[in-house]
Amino acid sequence: MRRTNMLARTLAPMLVSFALSVPSFAGEAEISSAQSTIDAQLRAFQSNDGALAYSYAAPNVKRIFPNVEIFMGMVESGYRPVRSPRNYAFGKVEEPSGTSVIQQVLIQGPDGKDYEAVYTLELQPDGVYRITGVSLRASNALST
Image (cartoon, rainbow, N blue to C red; front, side):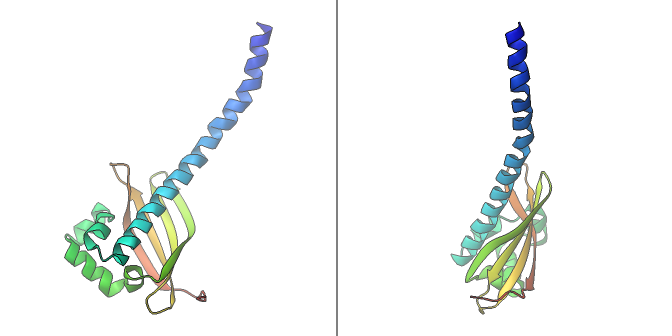
């Protein structure tokens, strides 16, 4: 019995430590999943696959832009650096809740200028993060 108590006292702190570390793994997985969605959409744009790019949009975006043609028209006219990036890299990320991610993406546009895109994504009922919005602005960073 004494041995059981000693084992319990030894294992308890380890189990508590493990339990407290689980949310950080979940956060990393959520962020990775959101980044995968953004990366997949940008690759779809680069491949001129509007239907695939549209599939990464969340329902709120699809209500405003109800088909691929309207969606791509909006992207072409207002988000050219996102539509045709020379290159891009993930920047700062926030996870305001367990179901939403805000991701900065640093983009070099087709004009060679730098831009900052801030993506918002929400976890959908099917378990996939989809893009709920993108804000785009010129960046002060220097291209190399």
